[in-house]
Image 1 (cartoon, rainbow, N blue to C red):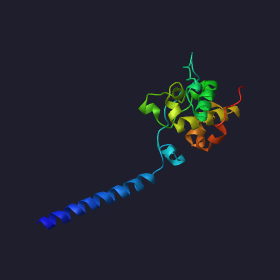
Image 2 (spheres, rainbow, N blue to C red; image 1 turned 180 degrees about the vertical axis):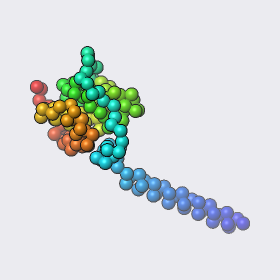
Image 3 (cartoon, rainbow, N blue to C red; image 1 turned 90 degrees about the vertical axis):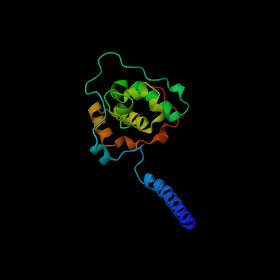
Image 4 (spheres, rainbow, N blue to C red; image 1 turned 120 degrees about the vertical axis):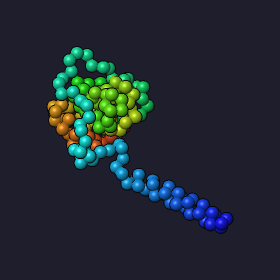
Length: 163
């Protein structure tokens, strides 16, 4: 009986160890939470945004100097310049669900944007597209299609020129 108990204990421990080895591989094969595919974007509802231009004063964005990372600083810098456009864009990190945000602008009126590569990518994409003359609706369509993922963050490692 004692031998069977030891054998059973070894089998259970072996199964648990095998499960722990396989679990991380399964988790690693999923898309990261920092990116969404175009198909994933098409399969889920569009996060909160405002269709109409803002009426009245918009919230201030946080001071970029509060953040040590240059990419984050640049994201907050451009967010301050394009608040009206960000107000009309969704955020695919789904902070509308988790934090009650009503648009991409809310991410930069708080510290949330500093820790979220989706927010940063979408804000920099919005900035680039608005400089090309795209409308909020055109930018939103690009965000929904996942085009924001093509933003080259390396070019935002240096401070942006003051304009």
